[in-house]
Length: 435
Image (cartoon, rainbow, N blue to C red):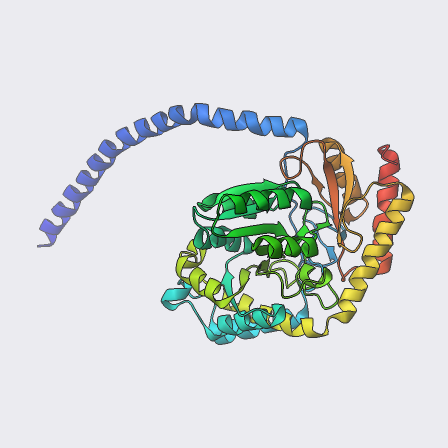
């Protein structure tokens, strides 16, 4: 019996060798064919990448080896650098209370749900967070998404049809643009913050007999630091019976007297119908987004919004930490005061030095306008050598000829750190002939 087993083993080994030889021939031929088939495609991609490098628009990611904070450690650097390019407006990204809350929820609710919400992916912590967000914004209900990009991708398709019109600011975020493209509504674009143009389009839409009209705007335009004229927008919405949608990603938690964003800042709290925002910027900086507004809309999104129906639920630890954020926002006056002091100091000093700045005076997004893409990249590199971490932005993120370094203030920055950033800008600006 043992002898028969040995013979069988030899036969099996020979059969395996023969099979591998047979398989290797077509596999090699397939690889050669695939390489040949892709040569033109990959060659075109390399040409496009090279043109980006030549134009100075090719983006290289810097790698951090530290938590996000006012000062960070960049891989390859010998010393920490001051970070003036994060969306960490309140300085909460590495706050001990949030880390503790995340760890506690991780222990009590697990790492993930391995499910979408409507199957078995909803925990009590998700419902508690949605309720906290609704209370904060003064709305009827809230729905969580993996990101605000997903929230914007899911909204318009779910609630607007061919009989409706969506009217969007020309400089709205890419996620809003992509979300609108997915819906079947009549699409219109008004010139950036141009209320006369917006009213002209609204008047035309009413004349055409559109069923619903939705005005869509960023609250804060993240590349420019502009703040939407929400009072005028809401007045036009009342006049032409339109809904108002505002993306509050760069406002929630830190603009307005109590951090409730541009509706509070512009004095239109309660007049904005739909708010989309993120947990990934001022509110801890992790991930997650949401839509908050009328309950009927939120119920519809739970049943029709594709990013919600087909994406995993928000990780429990993120939900738990985000709950802690909204508790902290009830007593955030000190953080808001520190942030605004930093904003005013930087703006006034940079203007006095001769730099051209963009954006609203109270906005912590402060673009230093340079125009040339290569200049923006080179200046950002020189700033890093001086211990200041900023990034140059150029086309296609901003229009051609409008390259800039976008500086973002945080409540985590100390006054002397802000001054150090100003001094570095002045030194590099003089060396580059900007001032």
